[in-house]
Image (cartoon, rainbow, N blue to C red):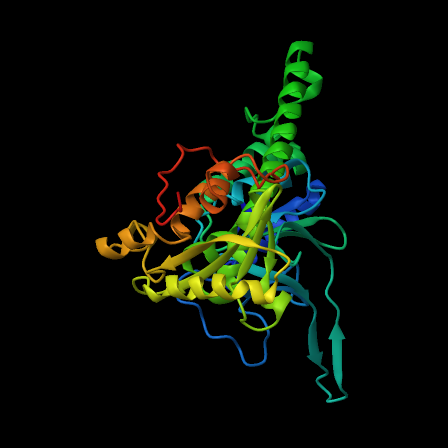
Length: 423
């Protein structure tokens, strides 16, 4: 087709390059018709990141409108999860939803508008050219910086869409014909007699009402999807510290994760290191309404659990009366994150396996629980199982009303195992 007749340009060649004349004809045609010139430019290179210019803070750049304005892109770390820019509506919101379906490992670039500088030929000094136009965010990163955006020229006659590399063009071109052209350049579809052009003046009442209902449905769907995505992200951010602590943690991370789980199950927990100072006793003191307090010792080890852990908890039980004579404790609970360098599926099911030692635990006031058990009860919101394991059989109904953790999928109640519960 003749370049001046086209409604959009896809990755136009560089200024003063081989395609410069064709691009200028495209812009001239849009200007003569009084239409917005739609331009799509790719930011960055997904494969083989190029070295950054020592004089630049950006990893990629695209010139906009003319040589005085450009957008720079700084490549973001892997795992970046963009969000739809606040207040986005219409075709641009639809584009944002489509781009959120990119592969999880696809790269993103944080975008920023730049001006330029030039030097007078007579050596009289430097001339600063401020950035022209406006950058409209479509997708933003966690800091609110745009990673996909539309740039509009000061006159409003050009609209550039800045798309990250590794984006499927089939999706972009489908959006261009079905959403962007009808919204920004409807005359182009009218000239081509495109089936995607909807002229309200030529529609029946039934078509108009149905289309309005469909657009309303799409708007509500997009809003509901965004709400659920935000809720899921919030639930994940709440659960991640507990999940990581229980499965892979040791030391303070593990103790904090266990304390959060026991609190969620309706028990009151006290950090004894903070309460007493130093390591005078076990890690936690656990209370519940109408129940005697219990000491909880928490251990993390990359290998098999050491049997002396039980002896350490016994000594804490023996010395407790000297520390808090006015607050008796009945039993102790040993919670162990064993083999934490292995994937949970590769770990042994029980904390201790030597039959003679396991049998000896039956005579001690000690309950042994693995963090994998605790994790499975927690993720299934089986608070009764947690209270029973920690407080004993009468602890199932003890404690205050249980606060609700972020929604988790319900599963069959996991198998419970513990040793040494005093009968």
